[in-house]
Amino acid sequence: MKPNQYLFIPFLGCLLLLAGTGPATAQCGAPLTANCQGVPSSELIQSSNGSVDFTFDDFSRYRSGITIGGATTLRLKVLPNNASCKWSLRVYIENNPGAGTPVNEWESMTSYGNGSSAPTLDLLSIKVYNGCGTPINNNVYQNFTPVNGSYIDIINDVSLVPAGSCNTNVNGAGTYLSNPSEFTFMIDYRVVPGLTFSPGMYQLNLHFCLVEQS
Image (cartoon, rainbow, N blue to C red; front, side):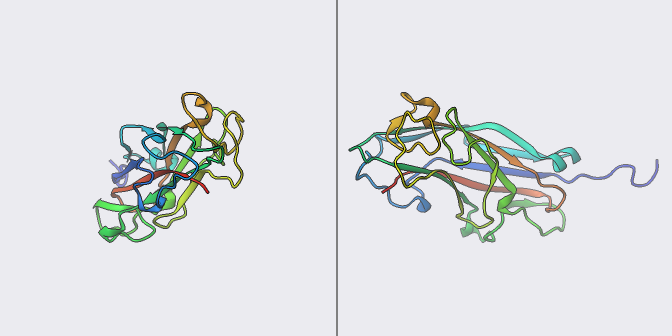
């Protein structure tokens, strides 16, 4: 057997925890209820198992990455107080800074070997889409800015785009029951680590925030 015929491939595990608690998270700010009805009348319903796991244990996965399609489904119900009801939807990234996590890195749960290069927050790509293409960047993978608390806008427009338009940035009152192609959002996740980062187990959280827009 020749030397170096076999190359040890370290294990890199990534655990992405998903939280759908909109107004309950600090980044979302205090919920407004001037023009739209508050919870529980209006709500964001998240359908997922609560976590998404990425396991990299061979070269092809390191190079090509792992894509998990349709891992999260969001269904919205936004009921109005008046005709000016308008909302926005965004997703924040959070790496548990209280544990001493550097501002630009995934939280390290377990590390292997002597490496010190933890994966950065921009390693995670997300793709949001629905039947009417209402997300700002519908069906396009996006990466977070590598800073804890950064966010990606899914729906955000200064103008009111009423339900039934089946167009970008629909943000008026409506529900997934009456307008499923506008008020339902599917989300894919992708991580392509390459061989840059230290092997280990890392995690982060995503917070989806549905809030009234003034």
